[in-house]
Image (cartoon, rainbow, N blue to C red):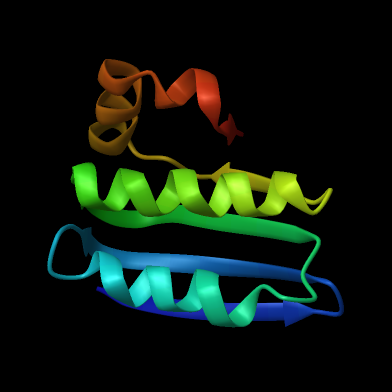
Amino acid sequence: MQIVQERQERAITLKLHGRLETRTAPELQEVVENELEDVMELGLDLEDLEYVSSAGLRVLLAASKRMKAKGGAMTVYHVNDEVMEVFKITGFDEILDIR
């Protein structure tokens, strides 16, 4: 998986490319833990995300909780059909702010 960061003051967009799964989820977890300290708006662009596993869902949930805990927001953009199906099956379509 590749993560491309676009930062503007207190906002950051992470574009995810590839597969967010057990092997690659720690990469995103590291960004969530180390790059969001002063960020109040987190955007996740999933247009090029091919697959998300339960490990990836845990990282997305942790990022959402982290942003909410500090009064920030996380928005998910450009979700393809395959990933959206996983979100619907797991109820993440009701948890995440998806646009």
